[in-house]
Amino acid sequence: MMKKLSALALLALLLAACGTTTESSEGTASTQATAVEALQVNEQPVQSGGESVDNQLSLDDELGLPFGFLPTDSDFLNVFSAPVSEWDCSASTVSGDATDADGDGVAVNATYNIQCTKSFTNLPFFDDVVKVERTGTLVMQDADDGDPASGYRASGDFTYSYLDGTFSASHSYDRSWTRTASGYDYDHTNRWSWEAGGVSYAIEHTHGGSYTPDDTDRPFDAGWIQENATVTQYLNEEAVQSVTEEVNLHLNAACDPAADDGTVTFSWSAGGLEHTKTATFTGCGEYDVQ
Image 1 (tube, one colour):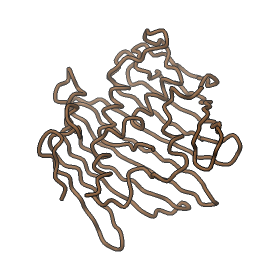
Image 2 (cartoon, one colour):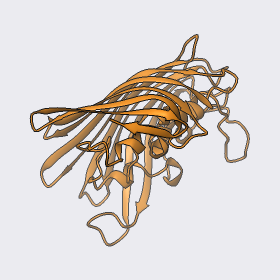
Image 3 (tube, rainbow, N blue to C red):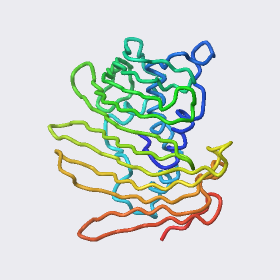
Image 4 (cartoon, one colour):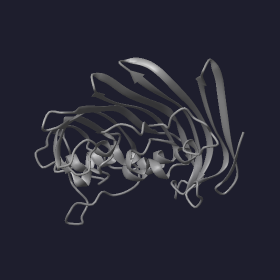
């Protein structure tokens, strides 16, 4: 099942793109950001979202949300969420400056022509192995290639197609991480869409905010995150349901869920009524929902 993008997943993105060294297959830092490394940096939130605070909360029956932050009924969810390392992306090409002097997986300013394939088993409606092709363009720009914690900008537009022609889906995004005097500001937009039975479906997740670490020497252990987000479902390009989220949390990687102070508030409308649920953290991994 696809894991959703969310507040704590942003920390995983920071770990992937703003504070670690990407290792090549030989075990040394890359001098160029490969297509796989660039994709891994951008898709880290998707892979890590299931560990996030608000993901756990949104799946809690107490909240009564009309839907999760990503749908659970798409045939493409396990395709979208398959780790980049499992795809064969050897046919991908790059133009521009793919230099990666600081080894963070982010190129100075490069455009990747993504060409990847992967065989899947146990896809809905299929008894046999299905080969899926992933194609598109990814643009990456490093704020400072001499500093892995400098932040970056990226945009991607991808199509996922079953090679027998039965299904196709798309995923597009724009995102930025900008370092500030106190931490980071960020803006993300993600959109997933697919068609089935002559009906088009889409879900769009926009979120932005700031992250301020407690300790700049160990920025990803704990810190405050403020975020506003909206998730909207579309049916035949018409918006049919939205959930907004306001986050003011003190994240703590040692807790489960990984917060020890602050609130997450979800708001939505259904049946002509407005609904709001707030989870208030009162200690390490401890919260109350009202």
